[in-house]
Amino acid sequence: MPTRVQLQTFLLMLCAGSIQLVCVDVPSGTEAVLGKDMKLTCISCMKREEVKAKTLVHWYYVLKTERGSTVNKSLIYKFEVDSPVPVPSPFMGRLLWNGSQDLQDLSISIRNVTYDDSGVYECHVFRQFEFDFFSPSISIVKNISLKVIEEASVDTAAIYSEIMMYVLLVFLTFWLLVEMVYCYRKISRSDKQAQDTATNYLAVPSGHKENPTAPISE
Image (cartoon, rainbow, N blue to C red; front, side):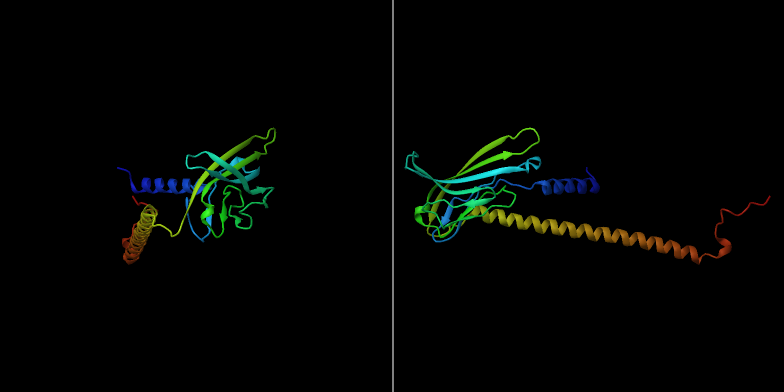
């Protein structure tokens, strides 16, 4: 059976591993509420050694038939040279940059969603990495099928996940509190034992105290 120290070490290793994760690929939502703002999430994680890179982002709106064949594909948003570039389209004036400064989150938001905004959106990411002797590049395409509804639906899975998260937080808080009380009592007992030993030693008459350095007479 693992000891308390081994369990604590294992938990610390888990915490340290989770802290190092700076980017999590989260899928985008697929339902937008009529008249509300909607975030189209597009995340492209970079490794630590790939921080220096030239990033280009192109967002497209794809109109498809019921059978899935593409009818029209139009560019609606561009992000180049660390800034957005205006693109003439039916979405102009309603699209906002909603990404991160490190350009791992490349999301945009649609303001005042209408029924006409339903459809497929494509996030095209192009990265040109800057190394000493070569400049590799990658291209990523992510698709988002958006459906506009009149009222927000209840997501039972999200509610269940949120409840589990709060239960886990309460459990971890309680566990940390128990550990703090245990350590405090252990330290208090050690201090009390040391104080009792010192008190008992001072209470013994000087003639009865052991003196290991005293010479032994023959």
